[in-house]
Length: 220
Image 1 (cartoon, rainbow, N blue to C red):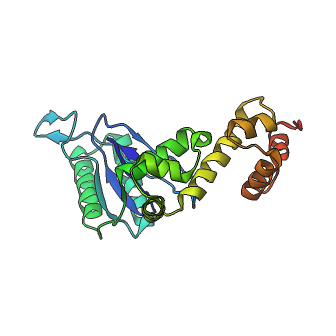
Image 2 (cartoon, rainbow, N blue to C red):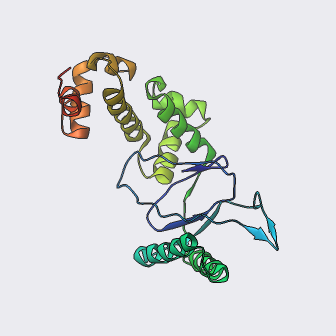
């Protein structure tokens, strides 16, 4: 996840509070998907509505009882939709935030700026990454240090992360374009279409052509 120029590694139970007008984006590239629960509220200082809150985003603790947190959020949303007791709504919202931020502090979730840059490069242009050595040099790191820091902070080796990015882009192109499988392989930097097809099948349990056929009923 990215917010205010900072990257975070997300895992179940994390609780964030964002300031109004902050741009937040997130992407899933490996591991189990995470269900997100969110609640929106207006920050006040006295009677003044704040457009921004200094110091946000704030990472609360790791919520261990996710089912309880979901029930709390659903109750707050019901109160908000009914436009009932504003004082009760504010109290429940405050208690939710205070309780979440008092939990055990989440560890090692902020990603180093250079690791974040490497992730952005791999996500935006996976075919443009000539080698991990060249990417590490561009970040002023040795290859070994880059591999170690990336794996520690992201939870996956950079080479595997790059493969994930390529496979996700390949799936997107199969779904949204008329490019032939060979053209997709070439666009992603593969010189051998058969090697590309084997990697895709290992990733999605079907060949690129069969994947597209399952979507459209037409084998390309």
